[in-house]
Length: 184
Image 1: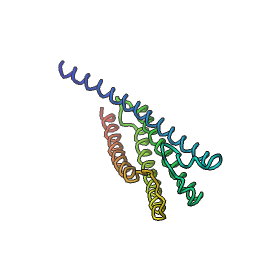
Image 2: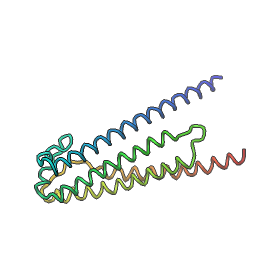
Image 3: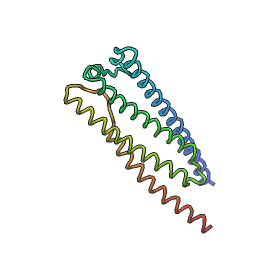
Image 4: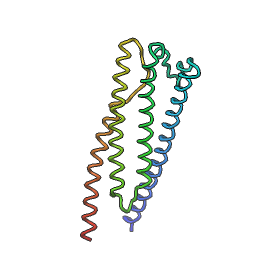
């Protein structure tokens, strides 16, 4: 009886944690969409409406020296930044889908496995884009143009590796679960 109450209490805690993680994932997704949208709009304004907007693109991001160095470099860097933010938002969209599709009665299913693998691939792609952006920023730094933007390449590459390993374990869990269903 006591063990049954303990399991019920643990199940309630797990459900609360999953619900909280789902809400947090949605909040991060929305925040990244807002940030990407703000940079897209302010970039458009700085290119076509008011050149002075490049002094404060988003939360103090000043790329005026880069704009003066060359509009092509300015557009290239903005493209990397926007692509990175869109990819981050998409990863969190996939995470929200993951929490929505999770079924505690049958946690190992092919749909979740595919989502986890997709998250790992997009994390890898995001890490590679961030790595290119970091290299480009360093190259610009050698030209005395400092870019105050944290690309986070290492974090995304590490995350991609960890999530891919989790995906492999998850695939094995699907195999074990299907074997157990066949033997019962």
